[in-house]
Structure formats: structure tokens, C-alpha cells
Length: 81
Picture 1 (spheres, rainbow, N blue to C red):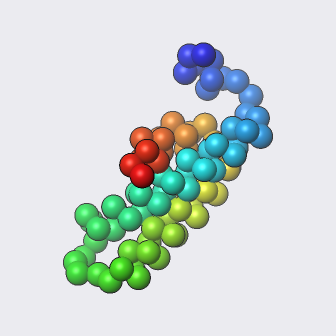
Picture 2: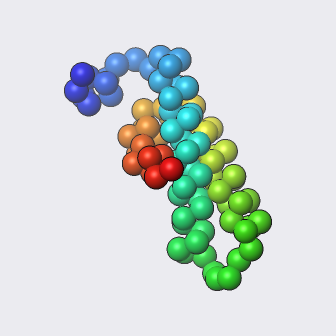
Picture 3: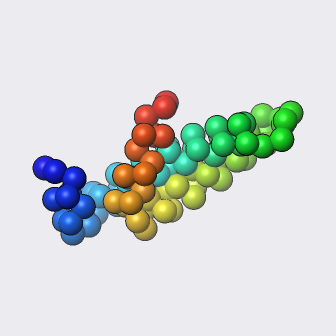
């Protein structure tokens, strides 16, 4: 199946589940690495954990609401782990 066919197909519940999982993993890495590279230094591990957890929750919610867009954008970030 091509990207165009996948993108134009109606959203199914399995798309929302995959979007939420990919959004959570991608959000975790974006939050963690974004805070490390762009934030002020030094910070404690607790602050990094809060940023990573908050970004993972945001990615989970956005992945469930916008599954195809979040899957397309965050899939590369979700494969870091």
C-alpha cells in the first residue's frame, strides 16, 4: 500500500492505537532530547524525567486524536529506543 492510499483511507481504531503508541514513544524522545539539547544546563534527572513524561503524554493524546499525522511525523523519533 502506498503512502497516498494509506493517507486517504478512513481512520480505523487500529490506526488510533498505533498513532497513540508511536506518539508516546516519539514524544518521550522528543521531550527528553529536546530538553537536553535546547534547555539550560545543568539540570537534574528528575527534570528530564518530567519533560520526557509530559511529552510522552502529549504525544499519546495527539496520536489518538490525529493518528495519521502523528504517525507520519513521529515515527522516526519512536525508533530511537
